[in-house]
Length: 67
Image (cartoon, rainbow, N blue to C red; front, side):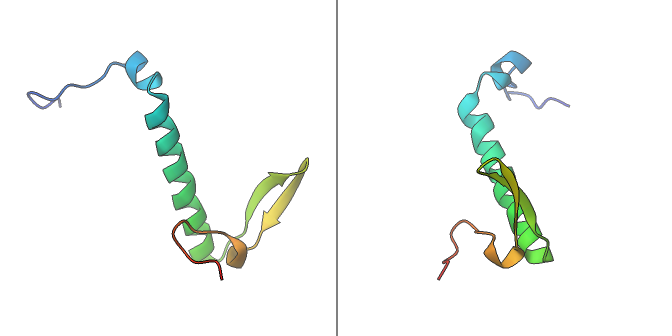
């Protein structure tokens, strides 16, 4: 239900908002990496033309010291 006074962008406007789309994708990746790390599950990534598994203890978390 639409709230009075709230402007909802039409689909084409939402698709053309590249900055917002990329920000949402980055946040989703950060959340997925954090869930995998804390669940103890590795993640697959692509490096030098090959699939590489990153172990949970090696998954970087934004804002966390890697020392």
